[in-house]
Length: 268
Image 1: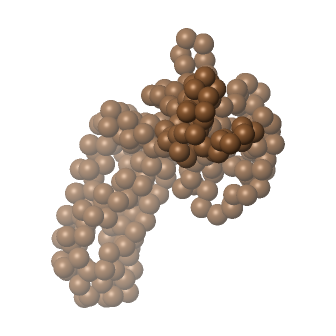
Image 2: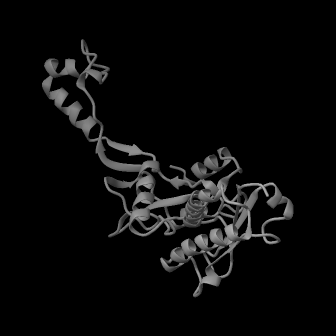
Image 3: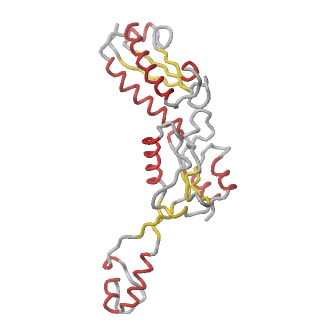
């Protein structure tokens, strides 16, 4: 297999839009699974008077047994998508969505379909032109087959380079949007803004205490802003728009990645 050629072909086919929402893994995986088949569905060629494996059983039992054994020995090779979905779910359940789904093993996997070298890994990991990083799956002596990469397809982005950061921000955005929906029938006033800000700060403080955010103190880990002359103009308030801004330090203290979203509240 040509690792360099496979990577180049993949990168050529992938659009440069919305790369921060995707991740790629290479290569396919050889599993310990065998194919489930019925004798009547297996076509036999080159045997006189026999067209199906089921016919061969009565015509030549010895050849039938050899053929069936050969088919059963063929390993099922699968794309890594389903295995990685399981890895993501495992990390979410045991460590937290902010943890990288890397350095993880698989069940029912024998080996990667292609052996990846350190040089291959460097080439997959870094695409200096378009930033389309590809995460390697490798075999290590004594450790087995492991996911050995944790980047999104947007590998040149300082903000969205890592899968763990992208997925954590997705979780926070979805959680906060749902939690603040209950304020849509409230007046767009300072009292509502304080309640919203306090609720979000309490949520982010718990995330920080759980280890999801960088920083030795809350102000280095996150901030929440909502209010007149902060996130809203007088016109926004008149039209019932409550704009919320959240900054989170997912990688380094006080280096905030910013989320902004709006809710439609009662018009003033």
